[in-house]
Length: 219
View 1 (cartoon, rainbow, N blue to C red):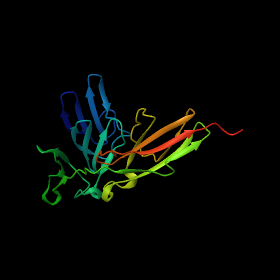
View 2: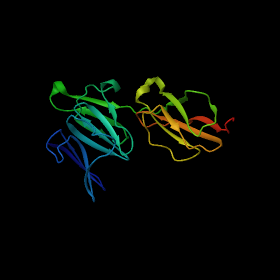
View 3: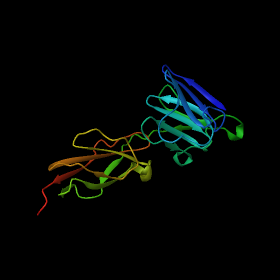
View 4: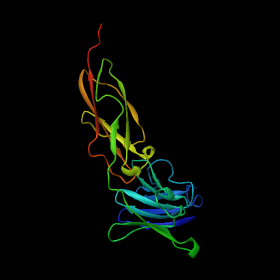
């Protein structure tokens, strides 16, 4: 069943439950000039009923019977539940007031009514390299690992996502990976930057840095 339709200047957004839409999967769909598609951001946002949608710049807030889910086109969905301060998981609407504050809630029978103002965390997380800040290697590849932490643990460590780059190249998409193999390194010095992002989209402004120096092997 279709539970919500939202129109923006560029798209039409449709929320539906597990059944009743084509294709028969619960989730959020958008319609552009090229046709219908499930909104990107990983696997289908939820296997439970979707009740409301709030397009918000480059992300979409989705109210479901299992909490609120924030999805965007490039990164893993973020789940907001009673662990994050919701009065209950079953959320029927999402709204944004004139001051930019987000409100989640359910407004039906009195004994089921609740409203929560979602306070966005504005403190960025910290990124830590799990190893020496400088490595000397003779191979063209090396494994590096990292970790991160958020102030007051607002975003649990396991929910932080990370992006990295080599030698001022393009940043990768944010993923939950806590290690990667850097390969194809030429002789000389290289720099790997890693930055953490929390559930509210705050990015570490001072990425962790690992210097990798590839030297000729000893024969």
